[in-house]
Image: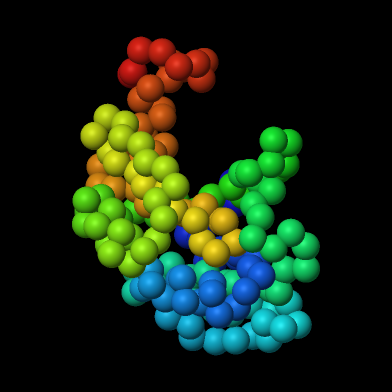
Length: 151
């Protein structure tokens, strides 16, 4: 087994530096370094929670499209970033106040999740308090991985 302690950072390819930085700043991230964005190196943004994202660019193809989520063909790759929030209702009010479009929501066994998209349509899932999504899914499937009676 590889001894992993945590994620170090998440890389997100973007097409418009200013729009993306502004969006992630709205969420509380702070731009701390430009590693050479125009040459394909990251803009490093850190949230007070410790989450580190690297905005990479500039994208050269299909700007503002998300082929992993929006195309009918299903390509391999990371489809979304899910982060825990301390209060789902306050989060929903915050995104409404900031003019961020909510693209989906779900409530499952008392845990609320809200979906939003960044300027390049990358999906962020904001998971409210409660069990982790992994725990919720695990409890809702049998040992064969089929949906069934919760364990």
